[in-house]
Image 1 (cartoon, rainbow, N blue to C red):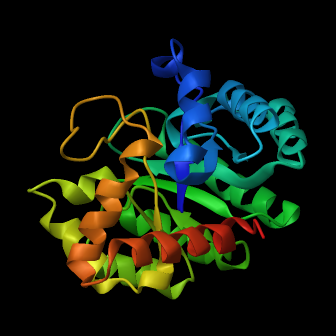
Image 2 (image 1 turned 180 degrees about the vertical axis):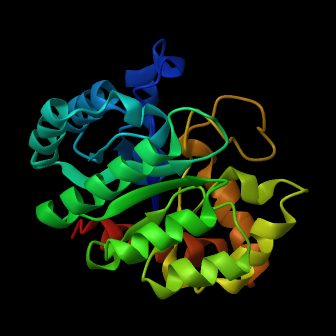
Length: 255
């Protein structure tokens, strides 16, 4: 059994065959999926998918690159969407310093506000952090995000930062990049992190693993990631799948 803890099946890359692909997932061992919002419209789309498919859940949130769209009025709309019975997290939220816009102060403000929303709703958070390791960790500590818990999605830092996030009780999301030959840093983190703090994710349609690197990604590729994680840890692939499945259920409180 596999749990894809971070997908974007609402993306236009799936417009031609979305229903066919999603219906095929359970018969191929993909038993649970969380479809993650990146702004208000994709959050609505994620909830619609979760309503359509029993095995799909949703996360409601605004990505740092879209945080400039947030206002007090539409933040109330986000809070309303977060109350949906199939919404299991606030995300993806965080900081992205790769781009110059929106302003870092804007990103920080809405990151903190969405952490507060998660705590208010009793939900974990899905954290996007790109080129912003220290500020991300500092805000998580300042906002007492450990009270919400959550996942550092698409983890891309080294073992020292991994230690900081793990010490706050967060999970590390690992996907297709783990299979890349040049992913030395992530392989070191995968070896370092306890297995009970790792979850599998695709970030599909992006980040397809070897041997499908560069192609459209889907949950069907996660066995490649599980296999590589098992190789690194010296654990059988089926044990990796079982452990990360249970980790995902615990993270998102899907019992």
